[in-house]
Length: 282
Ligand SMILES: [Fe+2]
Image 1: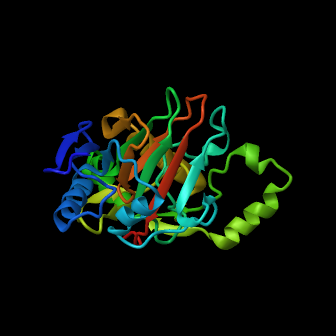
Image 2: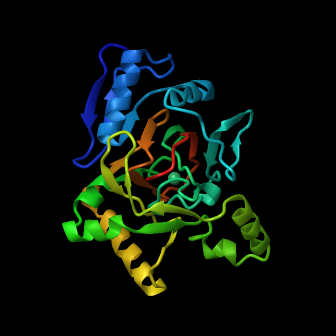
């Protein structure tokens, strides 16, 4: 594997770039770390191909960026509490969805949502299973100045149960589980526009999975505003799309992006995710 000068190739106009010339099975040098870190801040989601690393190496790479997050609900890979094993059934999506095939930012129902995630393709379907990301800086920048001013003063409530699918909430056991989830993960408040702690740039910070309402607005006002902001942010010009191969790795900045995992495949897909802790959005 090439370990010479790292190179970077943008994937789309708005965000995303593929990095080559770095072997993630080896610890990153200071220069490599700073190259990858700068690329993440500039391109928001970065990709590596042909990285046959194990869970220890994936954990070691992610840990360079901060402490690692332990997911409160999704099962981990046996023996590795920091690694989420996102598995489809043998014949297709099954429990793979985890609400991942809607536009969302991970874990915004937590007071300190993650800084980043590192996702590795362990097994890929014959066709399909791509992931898309979008640029929440671009979404904010494209709003008019008066609208930017209006939304910048607003606070949103994020709640894990905001968009639970009805095939779950309709189940007889759902009420007890939902109550338990609300005890473990009570609703939290985040600004509708956050300032990125490293770049200092502003971005929208609402998403389809977890933003339940905007404080101080009537329900119709809140629904209409969130609906507008989501459809605005989801326009194709702000997106990139990545086709996975076995041992592809993606790392995204969870503070200024959303992602959408397409469920359009009919064979097994296994992904390992390691998540880096973040800070409180301001
Ligand atoms: Fe996700």
